[in-house]
Amino acid sequence: MRIGGAIEKEWHNPEEWVKLAKDLRYSAVLCPVDCKSDRATRRDYLRAAIDADLLIGEVGVWRNCLSKNDAERKAAMEYAKAQLALADEFGANCCVNIIGSHSETAWDGFCAENYSDDFYALAVDSIREIIDDVKPRHTYYSIETMPWVTPDSPEAYLRLIRDVARDGFGVHLDFVNMINCPERYCKSTEFIKHCFDLLGPYVCSIHGKDVMMEQGYTTLIHETMPGKGTLDYPKILAMVEKLGSDMPLFVEHLPDYETYREAAAYVRRQAESVEIEVKG
Image (tube, rainbow, N blue to C red; front, side, top):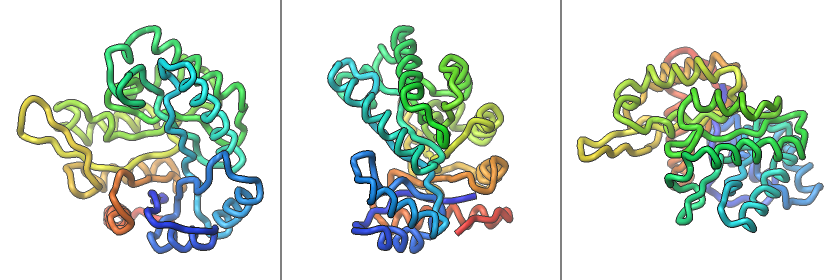
């Protein structure tokens, strides 16, 4: 398997970027440029990644393609298409976004309209449009699983795959985001196994975090870094490894460079404890 994450330090060229990734012992990386970069810059970073055996695991979108604001939605759609084209150029595992939201207070926020039939129909049409316009050959467009908007369960993701009905659509698996109720928390290993059982053939990239539930009212579930919560990482990493030796797992949402180093090192130790080879 491969471990990656963000690089919370400044770099100025591909050589500095590779040096930081290697210092963190990453073998998978987030795309270091976006669609606005010039062709020469893209070429140089791609060559540096190939030469250093760094897998480009994700090209992020992180825009609200289902915004109720038409201008915002159209801009997000165009950016998603451009980022998918970039992912295809780089041969990245996936281009990833959340499905979007009708919230008027946060681009990724929860609201009742996110559960409506009209919202779901618009989501399916939007994903199809992005894939159909770009026609990726070397990557997949994917939606990160979320706690308060579809796909919020492996069953919901399978339904989305069926309804989108495009070969260029894959799965971005964030199992922690779907641990959004006490039963899934208390039975986390069983729930995560269920995710891998149903979605494994479609998974392109994985986020690795941890989770902790407070003994308080009503239900307070917090994301935390790997090793600071209750998840059984040796068992989880065995599931990851079954998807292939190049499957990337990205630690995320950490405050600084050294915390990313700590999280990646923890995941590596857990993998090695069950004799899983980690590249890099």
